[in-house]
Length: 150
Image (cartoon, rainbow, N blue to C red):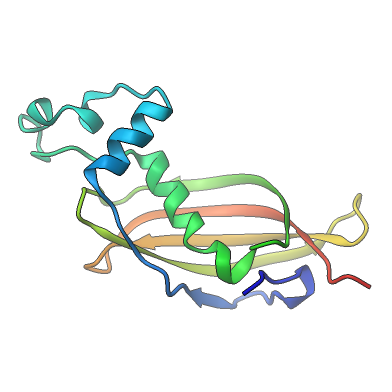
């Protein structure tokens, strides 16, 4: 299913994305390694056993990427020109290997691009939830989107 064009979005529309993903320890190790993040809280099980969490926390940037990635198929697949930025990103609950993450998206704002004819800016609020429906990530994202071809 292709993503939506700028004109197909409506302020207030909510998407409850069907695709979910269970995260693994290997996801955490690989992502932390690929991004040169040596923080013990992500990769050192012995250290993490001494923390309040008792086990490694999933890398929050991995969580953010996953939460947004789970939204792409129904919203922006093939119709995004560029991500313009993310703001107000929070991680209210930790994510651990074995958690299953799903996403919900609300369209918060729309405006035609003043400098790029045939394109518009969509502001999304993406929310990531775990298997207990606890919010684990929330972010506001602005995306430059294609308008429907003439």
